[in-house]
Image (cartoon, rainbow, N blue to C red; front, side, top):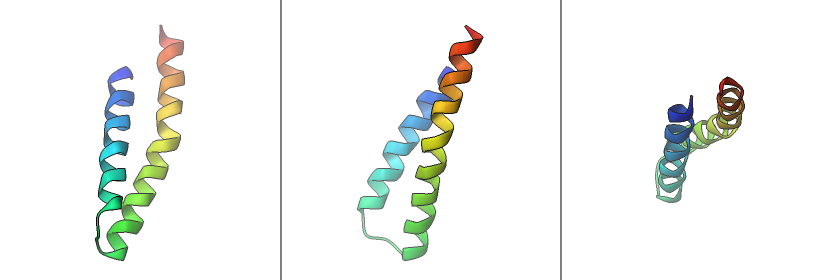
Amino acid sequence: MKLWVKNAKAMMKIYNEMIKKPSLPQLLKALKYCVEAYKYASPTFEMVSSELV
């Protein structure tokens, strides 16, 4: 779980950097959707990870 959280945060950074660059509107929309999904998933996995310890 901790590794997933670490990887998810790294991916969010990558997605946010990609959003800043010019791209097709469809790609931008998909990237923003991914960021939102990771934004809600990360705290959930952090909570589960802390309960397993």
